[in-house]
Length: 265
Image (cartoon, rainbow, N blue to C red; front, side, top):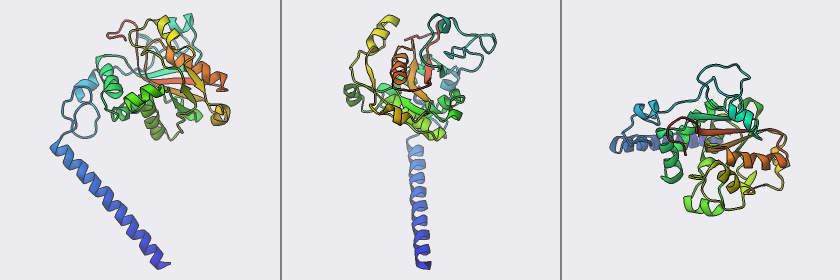
């Protein structure tokens, strides 16, 4: 028994040594090649994720906001006051929340994450998203990323929504199910399409896993995407999830477009 205990201690010391050496290598690399701000490439110190100037360019969404769509209000209109958009076109999901208003800095971060081969940006974005979605977590939901079509996934090599979902799972301790819904029909990119065009583009694009009900196991769903523009994508995905048996679907994105703000997409 003593020999076994000694071996366990030796293994533990070896693991700690390797972890220490890995940390030292990262620190030396940061000294030689300082990490850059993912939005402007300015050198960073420490692990802040974004330089002070770019962080100041992010407008985090905080109350007061529409309880359904999460659109920020200029003044507090009461806890039950819904936005005009939510009243005119009630969504199939229960609630949508976003971490920040879409802006020049937010758009650059999303672009670097999606097209710039900077998957590490997901960690920074997910930290803000975890706060924005804090009302979701107590119910123990399953986190589901909006899927990419297989052809687009091969081209990009990763799904940015999956990276965000995985980081949210790590931060919250909740499970992530990337196979609960799939994208079986290839669609055009949504950028540049009108609201009606976006709806038509994603109609019939998603399908649920054949054993979705068992995979859900009675849990609500938090559907994760990078940007909420018109909501066409997450609405289409929500309808598929609800037909498959999801009792409640909530949406969480890094950014959302707000009418009247700069740089809509």
